[in-house]
Length: 77
Image (tube, rainbow, N blue to C red; front, side):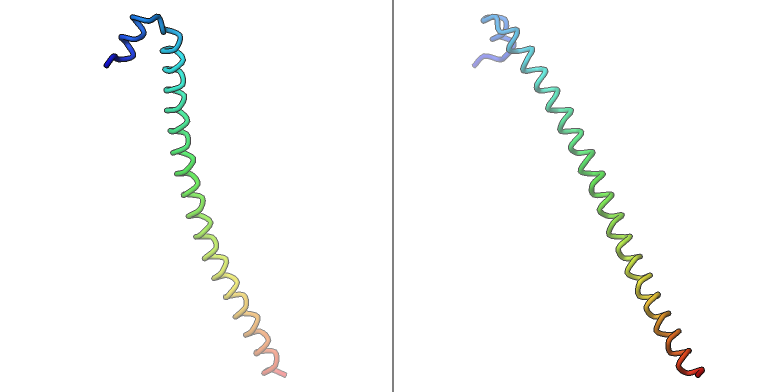
């Protein structure tokens, strides 16, 4: 079995080797970018989940406050 280096030397496939190498390094960069973007997406998703919890808490507190205000108004009349 021949390695790419032997094939390039023996069969004049320098252009193939250069193009393959460019594609390989481009694929590595793309893969690294994808990993970073996925990490960022997970962080954003975690932030959204945390904010949903906070908004739900605030809505419940507001609802309870409105209920208490209505109760106080009816009692004081």
